[in-house]
Length: 382
Image 1 (cartoon, rainbow, N blue to C red):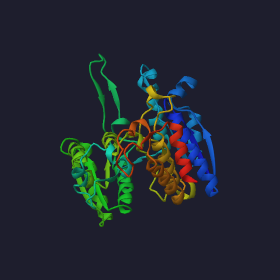
Image 2 (image 1 turned 60 degrees about the horizontal axis):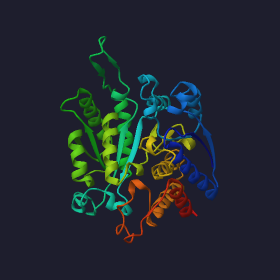
Image 3 (image 1 turned 90 degrees about the vertical axis):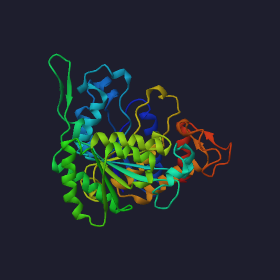
Image 4 (image 1 turned 120 degrees about the vertical axis):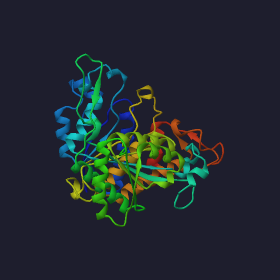
């Protein structure tokens, strides 16, 4: 199978972690007989430095012609002084908008190898867990191209006030709800809509649209929570949740909260899709997607070979699954990540937690750098 991939390494630690993901993809291609065609493009801070724009037009055109985009983090303090429309983050928002990727899938599961890295007690993790185990496995589906991040914004003439408008259409809400319901149907058949309908008119529209869409999925157990209550329940009983669907800003915040429960934000991948999995304009009729770790560019540790590459590698696995339909290959990559952790290898963000837990004997945990962790994943793929 031939697969075209636009690679945007990004800023800070982006090139380091994406480099390890590319090694894993090349190994997968060789092992399973696929040809991955990689085209590197610029966006974010590096693009500003080289072109003056956070998203050069040629980058967007290249991405549109590919089957998927593999993306590193964007931004850093060196560009903080730029006006809003020229900041690196505008490159990311422009890429999402330009490719029409409206549904962001962010899985958050507690791997048994990293149990000790989770700050919650066993009895809290076991609460509401379907199997009564100290674990959780949830998916946050975040609307990605609407809401306050894309709404009208500005400042008063005297500069003493500012505004950002939260705005959603029925179409924007319905299409992401259908992606979330489809995901729930393939999982434990539970969906929770998270909003602030007691205060926000836009959230009340979310509930109205959801009431109509819900009728098409009678086998899915649907519930609603206010976002503040959801944030509380995530640390009180994360096992309550299967699929959470919510707006752009709420999804951004809640997924970062969930990442802490998994042990580190360096473990969480994401997929941003332009359609429902199984349909769309990507390879084999699958949706075009942007795949990226949810962590930031972490410029303070860039170039030091200490960043965690696992979220980037797991993002590559999501790409194999959703944009190219390569389920066996995706599962192999995910299994290899688990195998590397089984050996006791830990990057600094997940180190110091696992000794004597998750099957690792006390004292057997080993600190690994970015490249060593990537090599361990490759070794497990052999």
